[in-house]
Amino acid sequence: MSDPDELDFDREIKVRLAFAVVAATLGIGVATFTDVSQWIAFGIVVVLGIVAPRAYLYLTDE
Image (cartoon, rainbow, N blue to C red):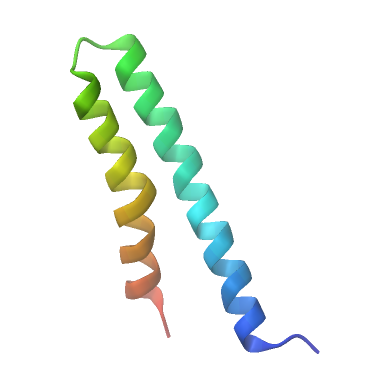
């Protein structure tokens, strides 16, 4: 039987990976296809890649 801590770790990795992929895609898209500053694109990556998954995991923690 799987350890509950191991399942939580697997879920955390999957959530962080999903947010990282979305953040990278949006950041690259914004930086490439719009005239916004690269710092704004970097901010999008930081917020979606680091802050958002932590908030999601914190809010959905049972």
